[in-house]
Image 1: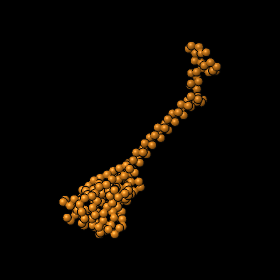
Image 2: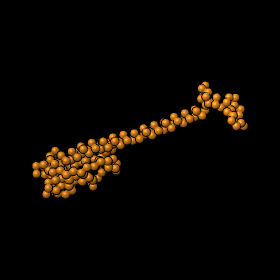
Image 3: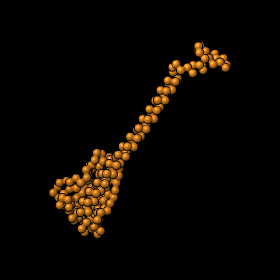
Image 4: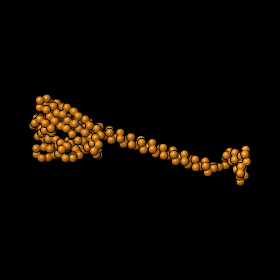
Length: 177
């Protein structure tokens, strides 16, 4: 047993305070505290890196989706604005394309799942206007034409799986009408 006020442990050859001030080596407790501290530090650094990588991936996907959306809106609006004539009013109407010089019609989402924005020509071939990039798929959700105002209304979404990453809607007036 230790005596009250004594600074020695039973069976110890050196006083306790002298052992704490001893600089000849490390005690087991000091080594364990160091190992635990380094382990916790590694966990914090790994969690920080994981959060940073997740944020980077999210920002990269959003940027790629915005770029694809910008290209899709530009290509579709140009195709519609420069259309030579439109067959009818309504949803996804046929029109004469100025780029292929024949009657074409965009595929609607009801026509099936496509990985691109496509239109079909009268001769039966498919033309890809905007192709998918990686897991980002452009979808022409809505396309209507109004002959009273000579305007096209359309909506394009960029999807990754079933998730809409970004989308835009636009109204375009036909040029030369």
